[in-house]
Each structure stands twice: as structure tokens, then as C-alpha cells.
Length: 74
Image (tube, one colour):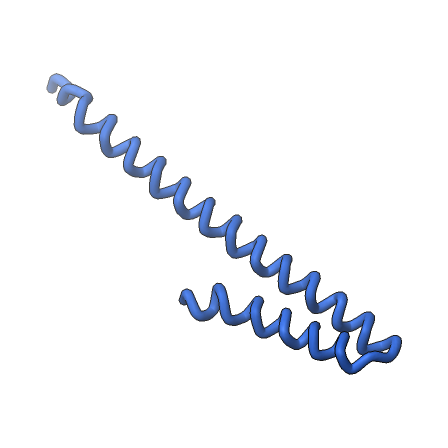
């Protein structure tokens, strides 16, 4: 999974740099777009990781609340 999170944006970024190095109007534009897409992929990965961490934190907090709560009277 780590290879996917790091490798995919890195590969997209490298492809963008290669297109920019090739030169010309179309490759230059495509290279700039690919570099932007690589940044968006990194940002999406960070947001997903933060969301998952937040979910784990909430579950842990709820578990701790349940431990402190006295059992209901029957």
C-alpha cells in the first residue's frame, strides 16, 4: 500500500517532468497538468489517511467512554 501511495504520484510526476523536458506546446502543457495531478493524488492520499485516523480516534474514544460508564440497572 505504501508503494501505491508514494509510487503512483512519483511516477505521474516523473512522467510530467519528462514531457516538459521533451518540449513543444502539447507536451509542455501535458507535463504541467501531470505534475498538478501528482500533487492532487498526494493531497487525496493525505486526506484519506487523516480521515481514517480520525475514525480510529473516535472509535477509541467511544470504547473508553463505554469502559467508564456504569452498567445499566436491570
